[in-house]
Image (tube, rainbow, N blue to C red; front, side, top):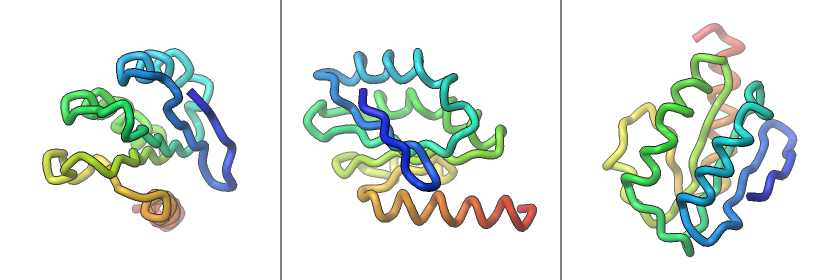
Length: 110
């Protein structure tokens, strides 16, 4: 797992060979970035399934409750298979846009 500090969020990228290894590594380290906006880029090469990506749903809910954002980037899965409040996008630009929009919403009290 690779972690890169961006201006408004931490980018977490999978470097593991399987989704389960990546998710396990993420869960172990997630408390280190509890107060940060997180963008998780799941590599298309590990072929994460819809069920795999649902593993992040509770983490995404926790982040929202803590007043931070959580966005998944994956271009292979069908985002219509997920709840509307679960931020999954196909590109980095869209992830950055969501982080920016949610930050503005929090500043405005929404």
